[in-house]
View (cartoon, rainbow, N blue to C red):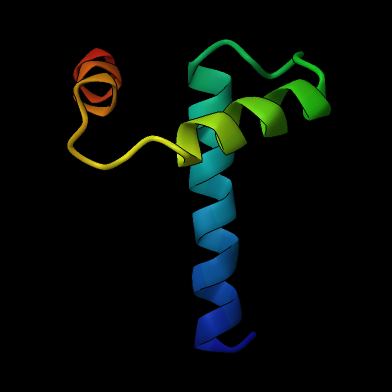
Length: 56
């Protein structure tokens, strides 16, 4: 396994852990993707971005 593939696999593993920690492991994948796409629209440093970061 190349170093790039190993890093990518580790990243996916860690992101999956975040989903489990948030209690969303049983959530519909389309729901999760929709939520993540909405979050991606938030400007870094915006009040909502900071609020959500503080929760996490």
